[in-house]
Length: 381
Image 1 (cartoon, helix red, strand yellow):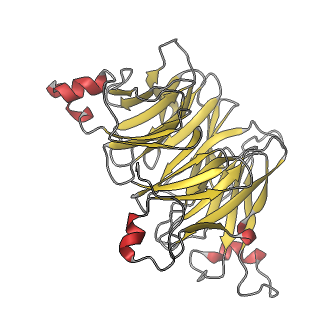
Image 2 (cartoon, rainbow, N blue to C red):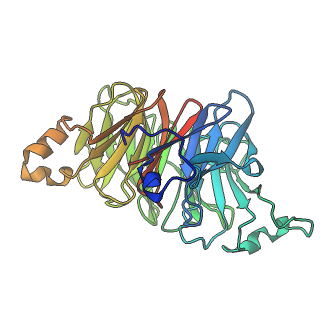
């Protein structure tokens, strides 16, 4: 990941040369904030990026790496205007292309966008979108259409802005959102209806992550990580509370998909990443201390239970091997060092500016994407 590759590659490059190329760069016409990988097997190297503009109209672009040229290209037909800057984007977690090709965004509301392209084979339950199809549609047209606008406030056409959301991989009809109005809302996107709405915290909720079919966790400006089980909506379990100083807001949460005992969180304006074991609440199992400025993003490896990537205002993306964390009870020196924050990353990459966004591709786990300033980079790790 510390490789020297650029965004260029010779078109006639051999397969070996292609494999060696480690970094591809795309420059957007605006500052990038929200960004995420496509999950579908038939859309490799596809990402959605969104603008951070201090105005009502913002933009979302869908870009794709062209394998043969090494260029990341935007499809103008799949670029669209978005109200306010999206706080997160996410493609439907549908590796096997069974469902419609959907992209979700959060801002003032949760929106679902339907992507139709010329190589669509009609797969994935097209019937919910027949109302958009017309006989005038040209067979080669690519387009994005708003499929659903979901407002969690039953009493008003307005709602508290959404800070984040997560799409449930195990049950893709469920999307959970977090809001500055202290709530988390679980949507059934097929019915376009609220399943559950919980007052989750005492202050703004900044992030939400699923840990299984009916279990999710959230972090908040009140400084706590809380876990909720939809079978018992009256109660939540506090896994961690920030202590230095107390009640410092927690801004991001990552739940380890390969080993759901572990989650990681970021403290506002802190260079530290806290890794938690939900079996032992309140005490971090590992603290990661090698960033030199505030950490902005975390991503667990989609294919390994003990690797995590972190990125921040020091322009660094760091990959860590946490394989020692499960052996803390054994009293090993490595586990002791990890618990005390003495762990070093195994890979480091320095970008050209503060890294605000980081995503690890679940379909192609050799690739991590970062966003800084107006640039999107994808890195082979």
